[in-house]
Image 1 (cartoon, helix red, strand yellow):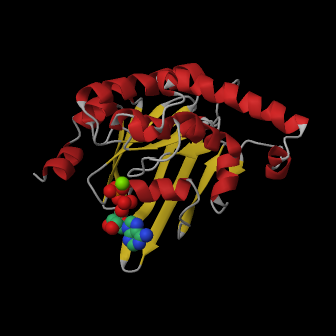
Image 2 (image 1 turned 30 degrees about the horizontal axis):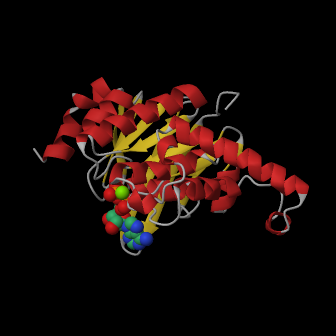
Length: 255
Ligand code: ADP
Ligand code: MG
């Protein structure tokens, strides 16, 4: 990213499923270029919030804005085109090589149509080359370069999960939504991913909204933390403030 990303502004977002309020008037602002953590117990509404932000779930009430652009009821591909990319909590790819997966991530950016690509028209060929170069750069940035042509099925779990992060980065997002990026990883894989997220934020200048249960990682990476419990924001502040917040301790420890 060349210019600072606009703020991502969530205002009063409510989501009701049959008989259940998954989000209840949630507001938060991801400041430009910051890492903002969204934490809370299982079922608090964190993934639902990501679904709203990425257009997979329509809120009952509330608005989502990226700078001046209203995202609230846009289709997922339009939101992605405006610079919001996400990873999913429980989805890890098993198909193709690392390069294949990163090129898939680039497709949303492609201006030459699929037909032109299939016919190998010169412009499409040029674009394809540029996409490949960009994908290599992202692989470099995420520590996947040594595995660029390796089938993802042969990678360690940590590397495979990092392919998801890399694929999201291939959209050249201004805001990156990471849903539990280190879940299931061992200590070394967690440390490596934390390093990658920190690097990516610094080098690409994007904003990150991070859902994560690993508090060590949240405390290390986040500038701001918002805590959800039963679909409501129960606390907001710096990692140090959150660590000492009695209501947060209650929600987590049940005391
Ligand atoms: P978290 O990611 O914080 O663990 P979720 O956002 O996945 O929480 O879920 C919040 C609540 O909404 C949970 O009670 C969950 O069962 C419910 N929920 C999530 N998605 C749906 C859905 N599509 N239909 C009905 N209930 C859902
Ligand atoms: Mg979740």
